[in-house]
Amino acid sequence: MIVGELRHGQLAIIDRLRETVRLSEGLTDNGALTEPAKLRALECLSRFGERLRDMRASRVRTAGTSTLRRASDSKAFRKEAEQALGHPIDVISGIEEARLIYNGVTHSLPPTDGLRLVLDIGGGSTELILGKAAKPSALESLNMGCVLMTEKYFVNGDINERNFAAARLAARLKLRPIKAFFRDSLEIEAIGTSGTIISTEAVARELGIIESSDLLPGVVEKLIDQVLEFDNIADLSLPGLSERRAQVWPGGLAILVELMEVLRIDGLRISDGALREGLLYDHLGRLQHEDARERSVQALALRYNVDQAQAARVGATASRLLAQCEQPWQLDSSLASMVLQWGTRLHEIGLDISHSGFQKHGAYIVANADLPGFPRSEQLFLAFLIATQRQRVDQSILEQLPSEWRIPALRLSILQRLAVLLNRSRSSLELPEIKVEVGEGSIRLEFSQGWLDDNPLTITDLERERNYLEQVGYDLTFS
Image (spheres, rainbow, N blue to C red):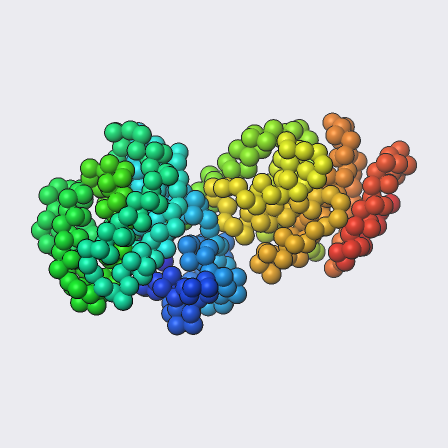
């Protein structure tokens, strides 16, 4: 955990807490987490929660990575984890993890106009990011990490040349499909971060085999030779290597040496900045209106040729409706208004594929695309709004959202549906004043006198909408 504070326009790190949990060690063959692993994590989160007790939820971001992406019981465990921590936990995609790592690294090193290749070997995944300045151009998350590699290829802790060769081959095969994206230029500054790489550099320094400011491939090979002098991981002991790191270091070394060989890395610069720092700077950007989610929405709208004028009309109507019911319907959070606006801007992206069922096409795109800045839960929230903009309200996505989001999501969906309906004519003429009154399970619209009489198609649409909303427990009336 990392805690920062904005001082005179600069982010200052004021506290760091770190505990080794290695949740991925607790993954069983069927993908479930063992009770001891869950207990370690929950106890750690409880201690972190004490530090965060007085902090507002809007000031805290928590990310779940590879193990929570893979665990079959991730949803149930996340509920326990959120209770222990006292704050929501977002499970982020591997690509989003890579983006945040790059963000942390670029803010931790001097700026440059050249290309940078960032490597991060975690417990369950390895992230590779190629970028220029603050902008990543290629991101990849591979399902191999130091814990997984050690467990699979150093069974019972046995260390020998055959096991190292098998682990290295596995890493090489994982890298083969993506290597061309990350080694297309000789003028690339390679940077390594996080546990395996930082520990490797620390051990090399303690042993006196660092020959330059960078970590060289030959140094990593020498460290592998040092490890091969031990028969079992339980006996592995080297200067600068903690007991906990030693348990997963052989697998991490196998990945690291192959990364350097396959990607032709001559030297690796070490950075302390990584995912946690990236989360912090990303959150600061949101507070200062530099939101990666906003860029993702804009890019998606352009890619799928959204009618910007129609999206703006629907968005303006949705905002007017929301302003009148955000208090009684408890939709006054910043996330609610942002997701509603994103939903209106993207509600027609499915039209670029087909008019028939376009809301389903759009929801599929949003739910499955790599959207930088969006945690998985927010991505599904947005997909739900797009899926339910018309016709029957499909609640299958709603059930995948955190329980506390489901009622707000359904209410936002109702507002977006009405905004879409009222702008069906795609006319540039302004809609009349609409008075909105809402109750626990009801919404009433009151239009300017005579307007509905002049718009019989809207009456028909509203009557049909009333039937759809009855199916989800809401009563729509209008006059």
